[in-house]
Image (tube, rainbow, N blue to C red):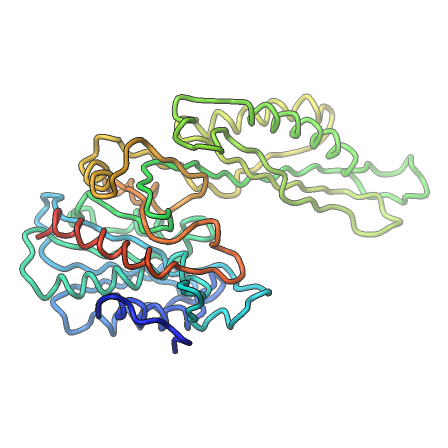
Length: 389
């Protein structure tokens, strides 16, 4: 149900809003199965001239690939890619988080911006395209678990049949306020563990405190953080006010009781690197820096998860076409991750562009602007006409 929703300027815009209302009503928090949402999409597309491929990933999660037209191996055509999972709704909403509500020209609900708004539009676009002759295919990819590290897209890149070449031109419809983005930072999740020995805190000669050395490590990491904030690379200018890599301390754990010397401590780190920086080199650098601060200690630094960076050529035909249609001159980079790097491993040229502002994603009262939503549809229609019709 849509509460107090305005009527858009065309029936197709309204159809996008209606489907968006259905999608946001399904809680696809990453901890839950996304199969109810996949079922909804398949019911919408079933019966049309569209090939539907459901690909199980894990724990009740699936990816969906829908194909209108024929894959002839030429790589011509267009892919529209999105993810169905969302972050938890949390508190502080002015209206129910899973009920689409229009207020002052904004469509509020968890996922309306990031990124079920684009998903609903893309589903309807491939349905419409399937009813008319296509010179080149239009493909829809919907993944799971993007919000927890692109796990669905990674699984797709590893399991998609190598003899079924998808169109190389790929739009990832994350909210960019309709800016055309060809690069984003990578994100490394790292965990530092220091080992000690249990003892009684009443006797300092027994045991070895694992928390105290962590303090030295934190001081060194904060110095590295400041150094990174001053660092610039050839692509920094594309990232506007966020031109540097960023190191963040995001979690600390250790100790069991007031009267026990802690035998283990843990520090979680996040490192966002520019796309022309090499992750392995920076992990090695962190290990070297920590070695001097933790000399004589038993410690380890583990790479827990990596969302690779994205860098698509500025001369890629899709990037040139998207910039021309958007009236954009110059490169734009963003500091959040997408499924793009994993899809690139399938030979896809990925450009990120979609309606909505990333600043309201993951926030209470997340919203999609009504006018920009209609603008996004017109933009995608023009791309489909150029690459598929």
